[in-house]
Length: 108
Image 1 (cartoon, one colour):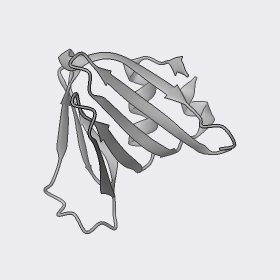
Image 2: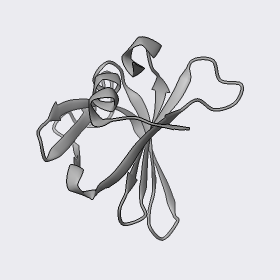
Image 3: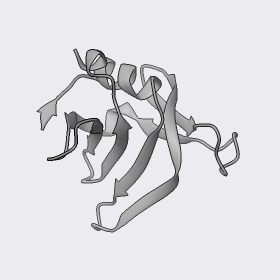
């Protein structure tokens, strides 16, 4: 696992669609059946929307306040040649994981 900066994470998350897993602070795990991509970025917030095609309405979105992010990491699971995980480690103990194919050139 290596730490990456916000610009690197944003480039990768804008370029594809990803499975989303959320480990909450109570350690429960939630996985979305929808694939998500980074649709908008402001200095304060990242906004994710469903990729297409999707059963989730296009107006659905998830927002992540950057002030809540402690660090961002990237890794590839053992025996995975293409699938990567970009993880947002939040100050409250939550972990947001976006899992999918990432072009290595986007990771710097």
